[in-house]
Length: 479
Image (tube, rainbow, N blue to C red):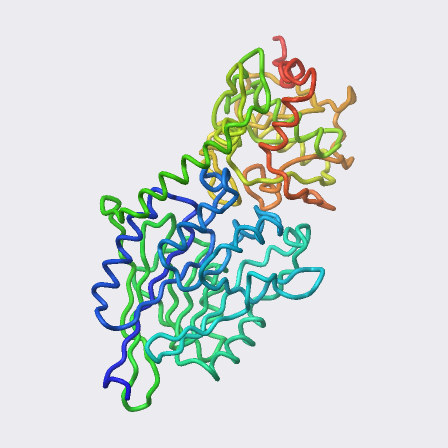
């Protein structure tokens, strides 16, 4: 016989983004919640983007450090976010998730070659705790064109979730969705899907101090970086025998409280990551300065690397992708990672000359160069001016803002506003981030999985690249 009142506590995290410094405090908070639950069962879920290759622990171990922390913390199931799915190859993911000790659930991602989930992923799981059956499924954000380049088919999440929830409703006492889809989508799902007790959300980094109750479903979100721990409590109704939502909250995580085993593991993973990134990739004979407000050799080197990699006549990149100057001497993989941590990829597009000119005009304005940018893979602080290769710009630095008096040349010929040019640039711009006129490009072809730091490495190893990046692209006009 079951007890008169059965309770179940659900704990959840999301978008930790490899903030290893918060994993020990988070584990301590989880331990306290389990103590407070006393004899009633507690389950712990993560909603994706636990990994972020901006962290040396993740980059150096290719995600194995994150799996170790997930296992030590004792998660019961996880789903993947775009940081897992789009910044690691399928082979890398197969290797890293081979060591996970809990189910990875995601119902809208399959391998293109087989039409089935990979061996390490399943569309749902049913967990049983003290006689309570908890059905868990998950879904990740459908970045269709990007996933297809990595050998995945990403399916429409609502229909996939509807089918999984229908199956789980027949077998489980409670149905939970791990949704790396964002809050607006979670709210729509709560309205349209039947029999779902809770949607544990992520992707949009939303903090819901208390769950939103939408059509009887608790819609949740616990922020980002491990600063909060989501908590839900369910109770079985004695009359109907069904579980109902009782209470929920986001618990702030105190960074001063630690779980010793996680602290020591995090320190070890940092050491492992740094050791893996200690490889020397180039030796330079000069320092490359960086200036986010104007032209500089290091930003020019980045533009060169993008133009060479894409094989295009010209390239446009923002200097804010770089976090500091490149020193003289021995350059390691870890140094390039620290200076260019963004998981941003390049792309090729056809872009009208007028849109190139607009972006170049904007690059002369402080409101663009100093713009603070969040998301879409950007790991810098400010957008920075545009660095170019294959272009020559003559401008007057003394004119009033928004004066359009610049002359632009492509291969020695004046830029034609009505002509389309093949341009190598960054995927971030295609989402209307930063220099928005670049998003007007057509026939966009994304180049995955190489990151900008990979391209910098190749360019540093190319003879003559350091001399080329010192040549002026933005030339002030003589008055």
